[in-house]
Amino acid sequence: MKNSLGAMDTEENGRYPPSQKDIVINMDLTNVDEKLIEEHNEGLKDIEQQLSDLVEITNDISHQTNAQGEDIKGIETKTKTAEANVDAAIDQQHKASILQCSARKKIILIVAIVLIIVIIVIAVPTAILTR
Figure 1 (cartoon, helix red, strand yellow):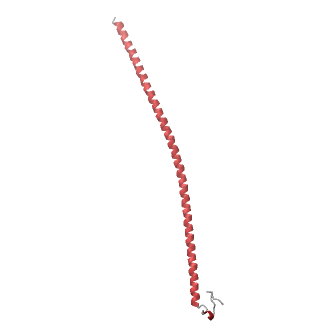
Figure 2 (figure 1 turned 30 degrees about the vertical axis):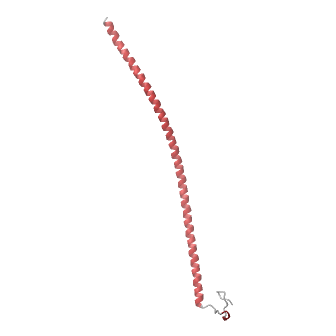
Figure 3 (figure 1 turned 90 degrees about the vertical axis):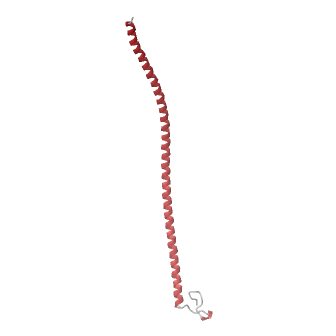
């Protein structure tokens, strides 16, 4: 008959049936193996949780990056609109400057004509009176 270690329980093979001490040691080794397996499983669960947390963090970063990309596109669009508005404002200012210069020339011409008329109005009666 074989014992739990696979050896014959007879004196023929030079072995005796396992003693109680051998059985206790064998049970302790079994308990140690079970504890190691438990610790290993807990370690795997911890790694699994950490990987799950990492995936969640990566997804959050991805969403934030996408949102920031949309914000940047919005800023880029607004910048282009502002640039076009500045260009239009420069054109309008240039046109206004030309119109202002033209208006000054017209005002000077009108003032000159009015002065000539005033001089004529004053000079003609004086010339008539002095004759």
